[in-house]
Structure formats: C-alpha cells, structure tokens
Amino acid sequence: MEHGDRAQPCETTTELGEAVRTARDRARLSQRVLAARSGVSLRTLREIERGRVRVPRARSMERLAATLQAPGLLDHGAVRTAERPGPDGAEDRFLLRVLGPLGAARAGVPLNAGTPMQQSLLGLLALHANQSVTHAEIVETLWGEHPPGSFNQLIHTYVSRLRSLLAKHQDAGTGLPRIERRHAGYELRIDAAQLDLLQFGELMAEAETVRATGDPAREARLLADALGLWSGPVLGGCSARLREHPRAIGLAQRQVTAALRFAQLAEVSGDHERAVDQLRPLVRQHPLHEGLHARLMLALAEDGRRVEALDLFGRIDRTLRGQFGIEPGPELRAAQLAVLRGTA
Image (cartoon, rainbow, N blue to C red; front, top):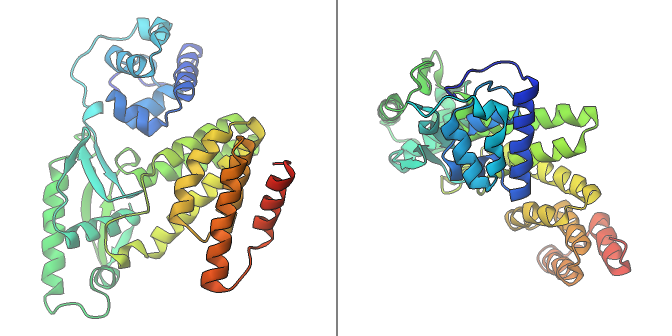
C-alpha cells in the first residue's frame, strides 16, 4: 500500500482523487495502463482516486502528474503536505495476470513461472483464487482422462516449485501470495492487488452498485477500468483444457457483458470512439457473437464510419451463411437497417 496515511475520504483527498481521475479520463488511460506507465501500483492509484490516502507520497504524485502531463495535480493541498520520497514497496508489488496470457511480474519485470504444466497449475489455482481446488480437478485439467502414473508426484513437484516462486515475492505484512494445502487439494491465497482477476471482480461489483445509483459517467469509468485489465483471451497460450475451463469461459462472458454495457453508456454520452476501441478486439475473439457485431456496427456508424459498419455486417453475414447456412438474427438486421437509414 501507499506509505502515506490512509483514512476515510475527506474533502481535500476527494478533490485530489477526482482531479487524478479527470486527468486520466482526459488522457484516455485505464487505471492499469496509468499504473504501469507511471510506476505507481494499481492499488495505490485506486486508493488515491477514491480519496482514501490522506497524505499521498510526493514521489507517487510526481510520477502520476508527469505521466498524465498534468502538473496541476501537484498544487493540491493533499500533495503539498505529502512526505518526501522514502522507502516505498508499493511500486514493487507482485502481480499475477490471467486476463490475457498468463504472466507473473514484480515491479513490471516478468517472472519465470516454470514449465507449461506448472503454469497451467498456477492458472487453474488463480481461476479459483482464495478457494480450494480439488486434487481430482487438478488432474483432470492438467492431463484429462489419461494422466501419467506419476501424476501425484508431478503435482507435488509443481506445487513445491510454485511455492518457492511465490515465497520470493510475498507481501511482508500479509504473507501473500502463497499456496496452502487443503484436505482435498490446494488453494492459492492472494490479495486482490496481486491478481487482475480479483481486481476485475471488484470493479465490476462497484460498477453494478453505481448503476443502481444512476451515475452513468462513473459507471462508465469503472467499466473502462475493468476492461483495461484485459490483454487478450483468458489464459491465452495455456492448454486448451485450461482455456476452456468453465471459470475461464465465465470470465470471458463477463468481459463481453462489460463491453456491451460500456458501449451502451458510450452511445448516450457520445463517446463512440472509445466504444469502438473496446468492442473491436472482442469481435475478433468472438467472430460469431452477433450482439458484439451489432453493437460495434452502431458505434462505428455513430462515429461517422458507416462504410466500416456495413463491411462488418457483410463479413459476419458471409460467415453465417457460408459456414452454417443461416441468416443474421434480428439484432444484426436491426443494426444494419439503422446504419443504412442513417439513424444510428
């Protein structure tokens, strides 16, 4: 955590948080990207934006201001009273990523997570973060129906090596991350600040809460931050059995849901270009998802790119007819009609 004092939000820190968030929105950066570029931990950035750091570190604010090209941030009272740089482990935090290619890093420097099988086990434990994974599920995910005769010893070896890796990067206060033995299997104990999957869940839950209060601008910011955690398909590069795990599929569905909701909010606010940026990579990942195609068509048209929107319809139309012998559904047809009529 930030080595400044932490407390409930007050007027000064709330104003600072709003100023940082406004500057980040203006720069069109997600929290994750800003954290990576500035060298400030994601957790610290989130706490600053929420107004929960009473005295932020001057070094952290200087880095944020420089990255955002917003020197005015340093004029806020909460920053002027900040302590000067000292030992700070916040920027040195361990981070495990599963929302894209599996990866572990410390202070942005990649760590070697071992052999492909060892990485698959780490990915499986991360999908069930802070929950026990049974021995039977580990065997099924790693080897399927035909495990080797030495599978028990292999699992023990993989766990031992992963424990050694994590032990080098545990938080001094919490002892996390670590792998614990459970009666029927193993559990990865990890803090939300150390795993992008948990960060995504927190942001999605907060967005849902904000949605109920009727604050679409804040909801859109939270969804953008949640989507900014993704860098590709869940656990990309890992085995097919792991990528097709029900939890991985469920995560991918939540990403689609978040992107569609963000695009819906962007349609109202007029931020069509950002909606296009969020939807386009998902359309590539889900080439048959008619809802994503329809929403991207509308966003393109609303951004003045009607030709691209119609080309997109043509591609999925040919795919559906050529590969499956079916016509586009009503949602795609309605989007095409809206683009043709110029009502999108």
